[in-house]
Length: 396
Image (cartoon, rainbow, N blue to C red; front, side, top):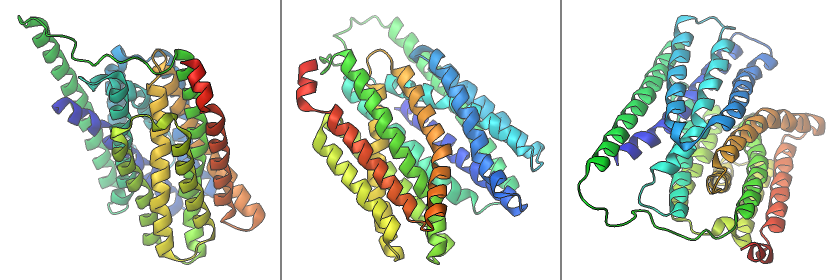
């Protein structure tokens, strides 16, 4: 139990401190009256490093070396936070943003494989579901809480907090390694005869080629879904300003999205087979489409809170969908998990630019949300095609 608590603290802490890096650096550039391209480049610089290193990690990561890579990520993020504190120039922030992208990449894909491996005593299927659910819960909570917390402290205090979190992550990983080593020694030294396999043996519901196809479907749904998330995060503040909604309400609406996303993932921890079904895909997609269209056309702040909650249900489902289908692959989880991170990283960098361009060209900020709703329709169409019951039955 202690191993699991420490393990799932890691994605919370890393996404919390990444939220701090994004908020503090962008805010400093904005306060210095830098051009908008410089402000936007803060997240872009992080994303470039993240995607490049994730591509390399995808070729190296496996369950046996995942913990070592996570430890390396914690050390790098500790050095990054110290760099932000000691060398605090405005433009030297780009150096540390690049380093933080590398540190995050050393964590994300390896952690998902590690989380899958620590779900002891469960069948392969239920262990994958638990890992997916708790991973999505914890990173979502961290990402939601970080900006809210860092908005209320000074820059120096913010970087002290990120350094403390990075060191806590590093210490947690070291402690996990020691606990697992001690458990392995205890098990190997036991004189009792094993009473049987503690893992439940289950017949895989599909052949490997079907898992590959479902993982690719997860990429499609996750990539297009991340496009919609990016419109909420980048265009909603502009929409709120146009409607003269206070900055506090704008921030709280974004927080509602992430918190509902987190607890939706938690609610999915008992999932059985909805990930392979068409009706749940329909319900998930309708929720996303209606909430995005509400963001496009509503004007009352209370309605936006409702839309944010509904959208959080959709985003929680889509990220669960993305992670589950990659972790469920019987032989290439590392490859597909790394692919997830690259797709999400690239989409998160490019999608805001596309949405902003559409809003500027049309002169209607809500057009970015209509564009996002169209992306959900495309993802849903892919689900209807690739989840045909007769096709799944043929492949069994």
